[in-house]
Structure formats: C-alpha cells, structure tokens
Length: 178
Ligand code: FES
Image 1 (cartoon, rainbow, N blue to C red):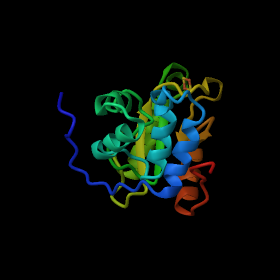
Image 2 (image 1 turned 60 degrees about the horizontal axis):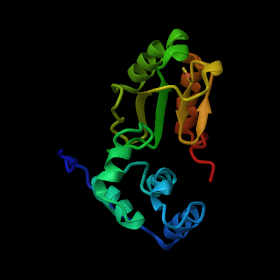
Image 3 (image 1 turned 120 degrees about the vertical axis):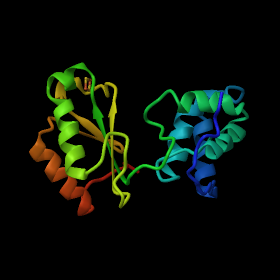
C-alpha cells in the first residue's frame, strides 16, 4: 500500500505543552494499552497542527504511542474527522446522510460551493474555507446541519450560510472549545 503520497509539507511541532496534554490523555487508559488513546491523541495533535495530519506527523504519533505507523494510517484514512491534507481555517463539514439529505443538504453544499468558488473537498485560495460532505454527525433532529471545528450549526438555510460566512470573515465564529 502506498502511504507516502502527500505533496504537502508540514512543520511538526510536538511542543512541551502538546506533550503534556498527550501524556495527560494517556492517564485515562491502561499503561499497557496506549493504542486506546489513539483517537483523542490524533485530535489533539491535529488541532495543534493547523487541522491536518501529514504522513510524517502520523508517524510521529505512532512513535509517541509505540505503535506501528500502519496502525495510525488505517485510523486516519478511515475517519473523515482527520484531514490528510491542508484545509481551510473554517472547514464546513456538511452532513450528507439521509435526514440532512432529505432536508436539502445537497442543495446547501452546492450553494456554499458556488458562493465560495470551490468544489467539495477543496479549499479557497486564501486558505479561509474548505467544504466537505461527511456522514451522519448525530444531530439528525436539527437537519440540515454542518460542523465547523468543535461546533454544530443547525437548521441551515442559504441565508444562514451567508451569515456564517460573513461571521467567519469577521472572526466571529468560534472553532474550538479550548
Ligand atoms: S443525518 Fe445529518 S446529522 Fe444525522
């Protein structure tokens, strides 16, 4: 399997603060079961690296958790919440599963992409916005919805999308809860 396919360069920065956070996470799991911490560790590492995980960074995570690199690669490539290439500061992850689809997610994705001048999976040239279609985010009762960072935006309409984009440009949209 080809794993080193990335053309994107990433500066790996395991700061003392990040390592402290990762070590704290490890205390939640048995000492001989470090792999159990893989998902939260990947979240922390991704948050600390502009929201994406290069192959080299995944290898660093494997080294930290004393895993084989393939054990990290197979997780990162399975879950859409881990990004394998640079993404925009504001990543619009639209749920495109049944409830949201029936409530118009396809049209909203099209609307957003046209407005931003990109296709799903792409990032605007200024690095501000990315758009992705993802699977059910567990907020089906609030369809159609999307996730930006740690926050959900629900009951979406074109007008709400317009406002969210303006709020992003004005720095009013919170991405992370920490
Ligand atoms: S179907 Fe969209 S959140 Fe579940």
